[in-house]
Image (cartoon, rainbow, N blue to C red; front, side, top):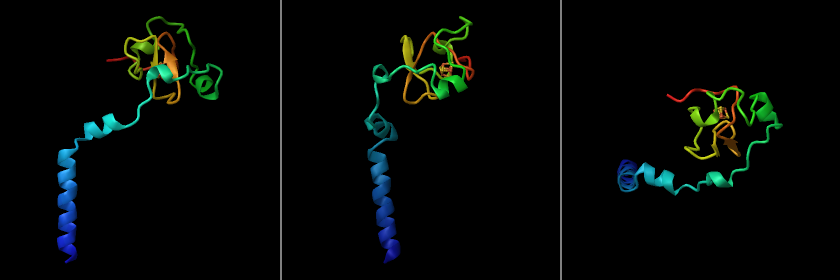
Length: 100
Ligand code: SF4
């Protein structure tokens, strides 16, 4: 009896997974527009720990060409190291990783 119910449950879960692709679930999650994010405060503890500066001293190493930058061509955008803030495309921090 328990096996039958377990099989039924697994069948329902499998059918749900087939009907609702993961991408649809992710797309349905609330997202915060990058324009809504306040800029990183360069004097914050996280920023100073990462030596974040709004103007990179090296124009070849800026957030906009860092692999962690998620702002595309925008002048500012998200970076996973500052989940509640946006970073400037012209900025830099010590975690910089060149985009491939
Ligand atoms: Fe900018 Fe640093 Fe984030 Fe790269 S890791 S986007 S350099 S703040």
